[in-house]
Amino acid sequence: MLKYGEINPLNVFGLRRLDHCPPHFEKVHFDLRTSEKHITDWVYENLIGRFWFGDFYDDKNTLCKCAAFETKSEASYFMLMIDSFNVYQQ
Image (cartoon, rainbow, N blue to C red):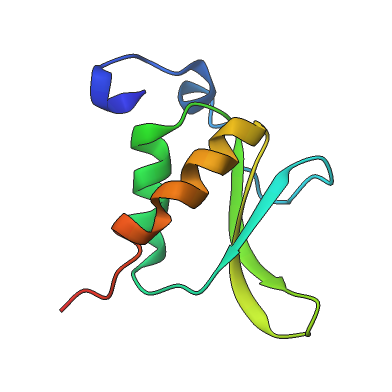
């Protein structure tokens, strides 16, 4: 994790954030209240696995933001913590 000064090989080689969402990734849907950079910075600082972040159409065909994680425990942690960093900024 970045905040503990550990180097992640996936970051070094640019393989951490994916351009597409693989089907086996665990998806988390949410409404974006802050900047995308704020969300991805939190992921880089607090998680270690591969992830995808982008737009997603849910079952009701409405557009929402989605973060998907290769490790299910990271998706769970993200869901628990998202309300603390996904807040409107003034």
